[in-house]
Length: 140
Image (cartoon, rainbow, N blue to C red):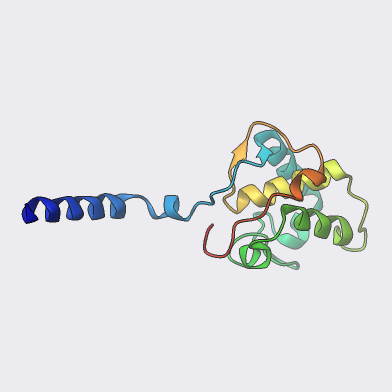
């Protein structure tokens, strides 16, 4: 009986450790943006943001928009906070010139680049993001 119990425990532990590490760290949040928004955000980012934030969001003149710096700054915050930051400060010297649709596309790219899931339905309004939070520290 003890041998069977020990075998079950060892088997369960082996199965848990066999799971890829990335699957344990992926966020437990619903998909937020469409793949189309992410791709449109990628094109807009290349034209508008890459000179400061680098072509791969890694940072250059401006800060990195990918892990770990981004995750530390936005953990547990509403996704709307990122939209608000973009609207009120970007592009440098031209704050407020991006449309809401453009800001949503950039937010989609940044979110997806940080491992958040992409879905099929687009986010139509920044207001939709007020109730959605980025994962907490250590959860993404």
